[in-house]
Amino acid sequence: MSGSDTNATMAFVLPAKLKADAVPQPSDGAVTVREMPAGRFVVLRFSGRRSAKHDAEALGRLRAWMQAEGLKELSPPVYGYFDPPWTPGFLRRNEVMLRTESSASINTPAKSN
Image 1 (cartoon, rainbow, N blue to C red):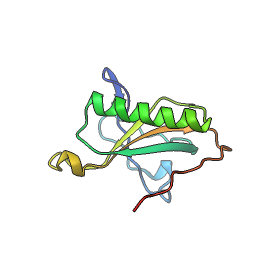
Image 2 (cartoon, one colour):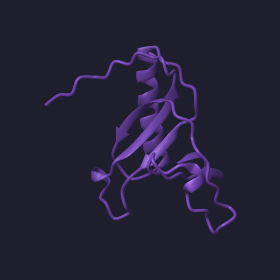
Image 3 (cartoon, helix red, strand yellow):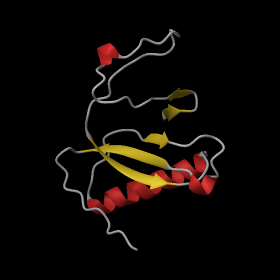
Image 4 (spheres, helix red, strand yellow):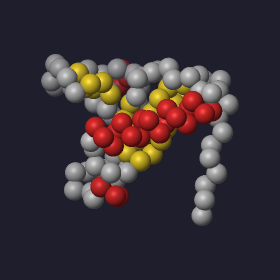
């Protein structure tokens, strides 16, 4: 998901082997097929139900980390929501993604056990 409440865009990820010209054409004229250019994204995974509050908190955490790492934000945020509506909030997998420089050297935090 990306955009605002009044101009939101929903996207679906298709297999890389399926080229844009081979994607089945939508039956609804309001739906379009386009290819998103490849790039480097910084991604933060978070849980909880979809809400403006959860999204804003996650985006704030991601932007703070990027600033600490000296990374430039090159795009509006894109959100990924991966679970059906009946999944409890604490089990949901969500992501917020921001495009950054393709040549950036990124240090990932160490995982704790």
